Image 1 (spheres, rainbow, N blue to C red):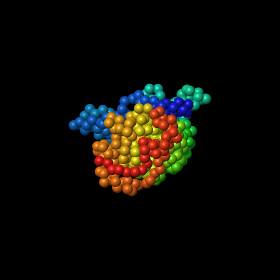
Image 2 (spheres, one colour; image 1 turned 90 degrees about the vertical axis):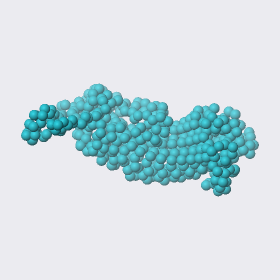
Image 3 (cartoon, rainbow, N blue to C red; image 1 turned 120 degrees about the vertical axis):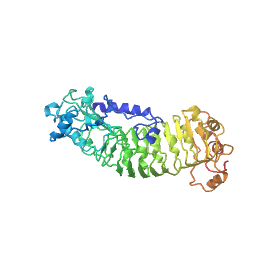
Image 4 (cartoon, one colour; image 1 turned 90 degrees about the horizontal axis):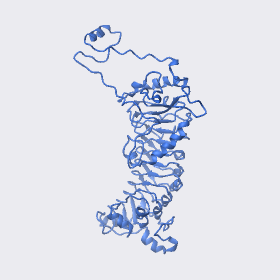
Length: 476
């Protein structure tokens, strides 16, 4: 659609203003960040909340009106002063529709409406009559449906107006399947359905030439990763979080040209595919699943695009990759609550834009380097959490200052003379048999003020101050 590319960019900008934790913790929000945001739509719902009041019951028994075939009961209710039954809406005639395209979509909507099993906000009560594009003209009919004109080479008049986006976010609708509904809108660009009760197969949308946003978050979808999503080459936004999907994630998912990819809070397992670094996503969340294996070293290939990434609360293991420090645009990196081990790579000191860095709840060990802590002064670092690991020492200058100012959390480590550490015996046992011996690379891959390049310093001095890959010592 003509509006598609412009709206896609606006979406990307909106995403950039948010943070990621809302996406992980709150299923009712579509966007992410340290604060959560409501899902976007092309046009706001200009109507009310779409609620339908229940019929009032009095001592006369006024309630749902009787069928016309029951004249005796109807007469009885007349004596009670009950209001007459509203006349059923007549089926619209073909000339009632703005154009042939909308006339063809009318039975699609009505057929889907007949399958709705729950509608707590009474939304479907507005799905009557021929005015499918009522919201375009400021009306309240057909809530959730939004119309636009097709690409600019066609005339922008009522003969070309078409349904371009469907936004059911927060409606609580229930239906056994979306197949035959979403895929029947030939000009659809967006389908948002956060916080409903949809299930069944994810429709095949490959025949929709303008489609670029799919949000199925917080529903009841289950089974393997939906194969119908993988071929959607124009997709910019994919949100499958808070469902019951299971199994491995197909590698082609990371070849999609998306801006945002949310797979969190499902049951995905297995290794994160090696082509993880092929993703074009700026915002990527795989948290709260059952992934195992290492963070792929191909992550360095995302340097041109990746801004926020959440790996937290999986079963990831292996050494913390040096390549993370090469992703220069990172603003949020969260790999807490895993089984990742090894020392902190000095390359992380090159993340000059990072604001939130969480590695808590892993099996990291060694020295916490000043080159990382200096980011609180030279960069944008606001929150650094390294608690619940096995670090034995911290940088003497910047790191100690961050500990005192509570920017750096180092509780439950093995650091002498700092309170709230692990028992000394537990630290001794860990260092006697660490889960994996990870290499320490004494190299900073960027020019940092106040830190000598490794070539200008003795390797032993660099290792002593900025790393110290192995070795032990218990904490208090």
